[in-house]
Length: 280
Image (tube, rainbow, N blue to C red; front, side, top):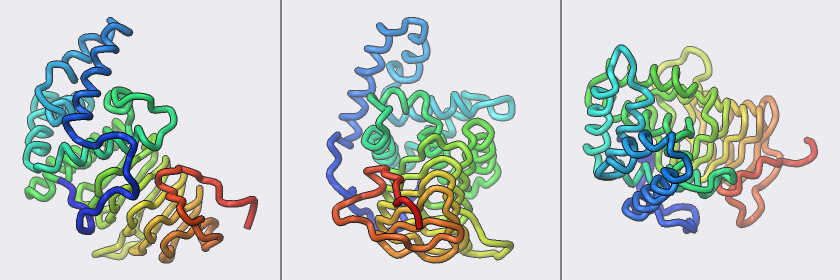
């Protein structure tokens, strides 16, 4: 499973919702039971995916496998693979819960845990990456790259299994997101659609961005090369970042440059505020 790129740190602020695995699992099950009444046609899926599962780890493994399993690797084999990954790391369920809570905290359209758990591509891609990452570090590169390939085909997000991604990460929409092999993403980062964390040419070795805690990467942002985006920074929509970004600043433009300091007390990854001024 993915390890945080730095020692485990507390969330940027206390969330308004519990991130305890047992609490979130209990609420998710209650939401599934309510949905059975709301939509009987979906009862079989809710029962198999959530209500028949003994734990949140089992539920995540079942859901990821159900969406990624195909003719090359059947759903049952994929489920066993996913479950092995989730059970191998004692922090696996905690990571998944923090990812789920991050969506509930930051996405105004999300009113219950059930919706992202069942339908959001960003959460599914992130948990699929966690399975691929575990496989990669088990020396099972072929299966790891198979999971990455299926993730890209099904969810439209391409995350290399060797990348290191913390918890409490929100990948909104996911479509077009590309995260390169030596990328490091700390906890509590928000990433919107069409973001690229890529290399800058054909260099080898450590060649991808390092995204610090609390960063907001807005729609279509491109961060290229082995550069660091500092803690609490905001990268504006369509910006092309080629140099380090100081902490608690906003960068915009092509190539990107600093246009402002983040106001005191503002946490871009939590506010999801993409406004960066009326012009440069």
